Length: 614
Image (cartoon, rainbow, N blue to C red; front, side, top):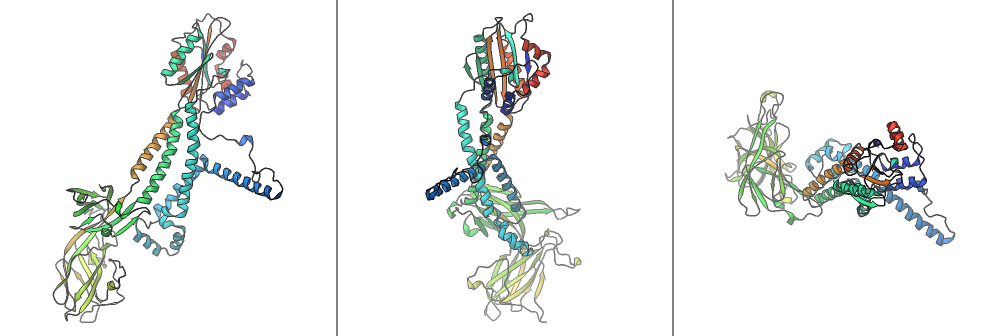
C-alpha cells in the first residue's frame, strides 16, 4: 500500500473549499476549473436539508412584484405578486428547521405553567382555592389562561404552528430523499488527490481486474456501486437521512397522539367508602371531564369494589406521619358480567382494565353514624365521607338529613357540620389531629335545623352546609349546641332526635382515566429515539476507486473518500478497503520508481494532509 492522506472525515462544504485551491500541498499541481467542478459534483446531494439560495440574491421587502406598471391593472398585478411573494417568504420561514426548533422550545416552555399552576382539568377544587388565596394574580392568570394551559389559545397556536412547520419540513425532504435513493453515486472527480482522504499505489494487475475486484469488495461492504469508464463510484449511509426523517415524522406522531388524547380523553374522580363500589358510568362519577369529541358511549364497562384500605405511618423521627403502607385492595370486574378479580392499587401503580387506568389519589376516614328523629325512626345510617384539611387528616365533616321529624312529629330538616380528628390531643390547645393514624379519634359536631335548600332544585356541594336558612340548636343555657364524640357516644338533640357515633370506615379517592393516544405516543417516542440514534451514528460517505495504466506499464490504483460530516471513521474505513483490495491488486516491488508527486507526499505527509484539507 502506498500512502494515505486526509483529515478525519469531511463535509461537502470542506470539499468545495478545497476546490477553491487557495492552499496547496508542496509539490501539488494546480487544479483546473474542470477539476473543481467535478469535485463539487462529487460532494453534492449528500443531505436532504433545504438549500440556501441566498447567494443568488434575495428580494428586499416590497420588491416581490418587480416593476409596478401604471394603471389599475398594474396595481392589482403588483398587489397580487406582493401578496404571493410575502406568503412564500412566510412559508419558507415557517418551514425552516430553525423556526421548527424555536417552536419546539416554546412548546416546552409553555408546559411549565401547566406544571406549576393548578389546572382546572386536573383538580378544579385546588385551582379555585389558588384563585381565592391569590387575589391579585388569580384574575391575571385567568386572562392568560394559565389555569387551563393545554386548552388555551396561545398554547394551541404554538402547537398548530409547530405541526405545520414539521409537515412543511418533512414533505420536501422526503421527496429529496426518495430522489437520492433512486439516483446513482456520482462519477469520480478528475483528481482524487484533492479529496480529504485518499491513497494510491501501483500494481501489476490489469485495470479491469482491479475495478471488478473493487466493485465486488464494495458491494460486500454494503456500498451502492456504479461503474463508469476507468473508475468505480460507491455510496453508503443512506439510513442517516432516513433516521432524520423518522425522527421528524415521530414528532408529528407525538403531536397527533397528544391531540387525540385531549379530544377523546375522559377523566373523573370517585370517592369510595370501604365496602362500596363503582361502575364506569357517568352518573357514578363525583367529578368528570372529557375531551370535545368524547361521547358517553365511549366509556368501557367495568366495575370494582373497595374491599379495604391499608395505611401505616412513620411514628418517630423527622419523618413522623409519613405513609409507609398506602394501598387499596379492590375486587374488579371487566365488562358487564366478568368474573371478579383481586387487585391492589397503590400510588403510581394503577389498576389497568378495559382500556382505563384507575389511580389511587387520596385517603381519609368516614365516621359511621346513625341519626334518629324525634319519633325514634332512623333518618340516616351510614358513613360520612369527610375531606382532609391538613397532612394529619383532620377532616371537615358535613351531614345533611332532609327527611326528619321533631318530637312533635313536625317535618323538619337538620344538618351537622364540624371536624373528625383521628388523633386528638387536648394538651396542644387545638382541635387539630396530631397524627394521621386512628390513635384517639373524635367526632366534633354542631347541629342546625331549618331549610337545607335542597328542595329548590339547585345543585349543592355535599361537603358544604349552607346555614343561611337554618338555626343552630342551643342547649338549656342558650349556648350553641356542640359535642365531641368518641366511638359509641350518642348526641341527644334538643328536639328529641339523636346521633350515635357507630364507628369509622376508611375511604379512598380514585381517578379513572382513559387516554386513547397513549399507545401511539409511546410508539412515536420510541421511533424518535431510533431516528435520533440513526442520524447521529450512521455516517453518509462516498468512495471512489480508479485504475489506469501509467507510462511504465503498471496500473495506478487510486482510492478516495468523502464524508458528509467530520468523522475519524472515513480514513480508517478507506485504509481497511485499501488493505482488502490489495489482495487482488498487490503493490509492485520497491525497485519500481515512484511517481514524483507521490515522492513529495511521502517525504512530507503532514504537508500533503494540509494541502488536502485546504
